[in-house]
Image (cartoon, rainbow, N blue to C red; front, side, top):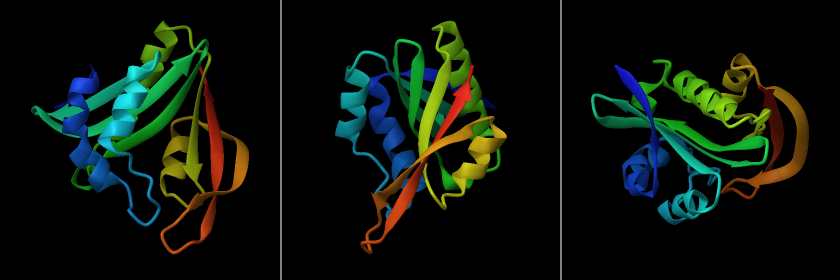
Length: 151
């Protein structure tokens, strides 16, 4: 049974195996523990953790300001894909944001990332594009697509 809970800086070590498994190193999108901790130290920093029988299988890291939330990272262990974990994390984030009177959740996704269709499925819509925002290890650049979900 998947359980979604709110976490803190004390939980960052538990999400790092998911971080390292979920993000393709070719694009350098995974964050370090220090980056996660600094985000959680800021006002509005939020960590949601997905657990299955006590084992961490996914997480979502976001930050909020006034009436907006930005989903910074969401990751699920590859072995736990297609179990609805990402959907449960987004649903919980929506609930938390609604309770905080947030009106919109933003995110950025690399053009070509298969997660784009998942975000569309969850109701996010494309609202912008940043040319050549992401740089892969081979030196090539990829656009970033900005998406938003109105609450």
